Length: 259
Length: 305
Image 1 (cartoon, rainbow over the protein chains, first blue to last red):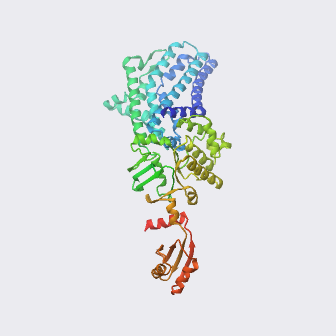
Image 2 (cartoon, rainbow over the protein chains, first blue to last red):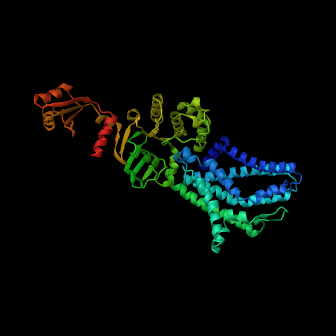
Image 3 (cartoon, chains in turn orange, red):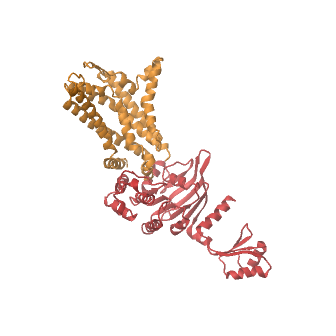
């Protein structure tokens, strides 16, 4: 039954335009950034930032945005299910809520991977085509960084699916996602400046450590969280813990929510 | 006959409001159960519980004899449902919506979509965006989705809602045909009681969350048979006269001094003559045949009393 649901969602998304719009916009943003740097470089020959390294390092230093992108994609695909009554349909037609939840997580994760792959191809390709090299080293940093954020990005996918299952007809779901992924970590970070134990907790929140533990400067000196075994472990542990925690909560809520 | 759906002691509370209060009913295979009730009577709540969209506070639902939650969930794939507003993807075309439904239900054969669109009268609108459909056409799309996969049971909450008169007739014909030719069991509700009268073989009357009665159409027809209402100055005496002189014991004395003579054996003049001959004043004399609507109103009054 879950496979049928996954196939029907795939059919629906392939024949709709939301996913193409979303991925197209993401690619356009990447291309626009590189075009801007290229334009500035062409306009002012002394402009120092028209390089592949600078362009790619902008993304590496803002990797926590991938969580936002992952959440936004799922929200774009599934948030109207409650309003449109399609979630209700699927349950009434005999699909278990558990299968629906897992099916959505699966479809969203695959689509998210396709979306990010398209973005990387356009972004890195346009950087190589328009900006000055060298490019291999920063590309390697970027790809490693994206790989390090993947587990928690999947956790964000699971969280938004869970929120959509819990609040099927509400627009407040995305706010809940932002609250959990960004606002609560920011709050803990703020309190952590005064209270040491809270700082220790805040340091394990992905939105915090992907912002604060990645340092790059223009000379190329870089420190990456995922370059050390303990840092990589932190990325993976928080990611998988997030998948398990949000998944358990989502499954529990999906089984309880009335439609 | 096997009960395909059984509700046992269903209670559903929303805060302090009891949407369902100890409702037990059984739907036998091959029947068409018409659920009758005002807004807020609990029809939609009952339908939602049957379809797994809501959970009872107490009581259980059995589908095809199964009562284990997981088994019941699996059995729902043998049911086609249309609950409240039909759900669809507004940006997809009608045929793509139905194709999504076909894939989701695991129904083989792409030709199924066209055949169903034809059956519900949506073939001309197949390429139209579902979000642009009129209310009646949306209802038809919802019906097509419910019919996908040739379900054994259809649970349809007000399926003729928003349909024009010809649409109502088409849905009625379709349900009659499915029931007659394929033995599909139907549980349906409608505010058009006259419509239900055409298709229902059983009725369940709900009022304020309570099941007033589940009765077969045959029994109901007998109860609604021809009758004469006569309001007289002394109903008790008239009742005695009725039994003694007309040898007729099928009557009811109603609270408003009316004697309702069920299945009258003589012309109406004979009954008025009986009252006049014994000096009883006649305030009202009426020959009537109760409709489902009248029966429902009477039942509601009794329930309220």
